[in-house]
Structure formats: C-alpha cells, structure tokens
Image (cartoon, rainbow, N blue to C red; front, side, top):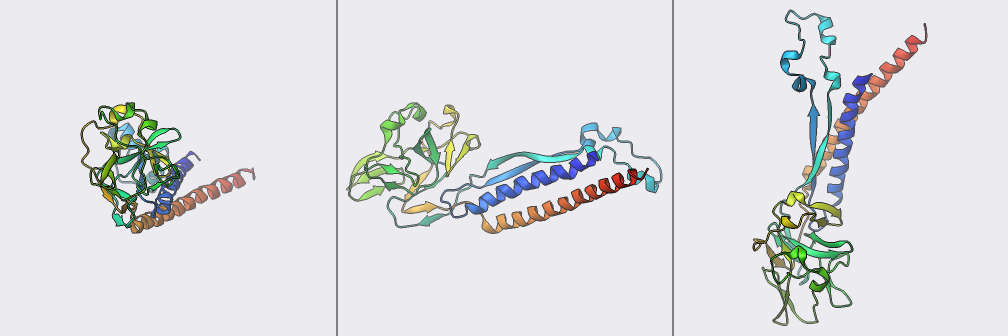
Length: 271
C-alpha cells in the first residue's frame, strides 16, 4: 500500500496551508502584520524519468491497461516553503501623536531583548522613564549618526527620550518636542526583504548586516496613523474553505485505502 503516501503527502501539505491561513486570519486586526503564503512542490514520475521512458501501450487500450500506474504511486506533493508578503497595508487614522505608520518598504528599528530588531507596527508610547517604546515595551531606536553602518552602532546609545510637550514627527522621521528637534527615528530599508525572518509579535530579524541599505530611504512616516494588516479577510476565508474541502477529500481517499487494506487482510486470513 505504498500508494497511500500520495494522498498522505497531500493531507500534510493542506494541513500546513490551513495553519498558515488560520494565522493570517487571526492577525487581521494586528497593526503592521504581513501575511504569509505557502509554496507547494510536486514530484511527478513522468517529469523525473522523461516521457520516453514511460511504457504507455501503443495500441488500442484494453481495460487492464488502465490498472497500470506508470510510477504514479511515487508521486507526491509537499510544502516547498513559506514566504512573507510585504505588500503595503492601508493607513488608518487614529489621531494619536505617537501612532506612526510607514508608507514604503522601510521598518522601524527596535531594541528587543536579543538585540536590534525591525517592525512595521508603529503603535508607540512613552514609558515611565520617558523612553519611546512599542506595545511590548521594546525601546524604539534613533538614527545612527554616521549612517555608514547602522548595525555596527550600540543600540543602547540610541534610545529615544521624549520630555513632556507637543510631539511632532515629520515624514522623514525627525522628532520635534515643543518645536525643537530632539531625535530622528531609525527608518531602515533592506536590499532583500525576503531575507528577513519573522520572530513573532510583528518583529523581524535581519541576519545579514550587508542587507541593510546604506542609501537614504524612500519610505515616509505618517504621524497619527497606524498601518493595518495586509490580510484580505475575504481572500483568506476563501482560501481556508478551499483548503478545508481539499483536506476532507484527501481524508476520504486515505479512508478508502484503509478499507482496501482491511479487506485484503480479511481475505488473506481466510486461507
């Protein structure tokens, strides 16, 4: 019953798709969230062997010819990987001066417990020490003055302190408190966004220092706005229904194989 691995591989792949779509739906209301997509890989014996090596009868086909699998029992499907869709989310006005949204490919730099990280979630606040932080309490970092290599600077030296007063943040990320410039947000763009790895809670890690663009960013900061998730609820619900139906269909195939195996065992025990 090695043919069982064909539908089983499909069931495993559909389960991964369901998990991914479910996570996307769960984060519809998460600010700055970027959806994930699944890529499937299919192995076909015909493509591996070449069409000339497949023994198809050159004759008028008889019913027994249709029982030949021609290596199809060795075919399977699997998840080739997942990737993050970095499409721009809609900017939603909040009226809060510490809510910031990015238009473009840039990201805010934050200081997480394990070092500098990056996020699109701009729901910021000021903690009891007067430091600008995100919703998890991670400090937001300022622009590294030399601009030669942001990753080489000491993040602890780039915390943003904001005293009481009117806070204005312009499109370039410059911070003004009572009309006096006090700091500038570290707004980072990457050579290859797909090289970023999700770390949870809307946080990304960049594992390669040379992936950070050294030139000026083309992204802009919008004060009083939050970037919505880029998840399309209708599209994801449709994907979930399709994946669920496919999974159910594959389960029926697996059950049919199981019944065939049970019947074969029952017949063999009679001898």
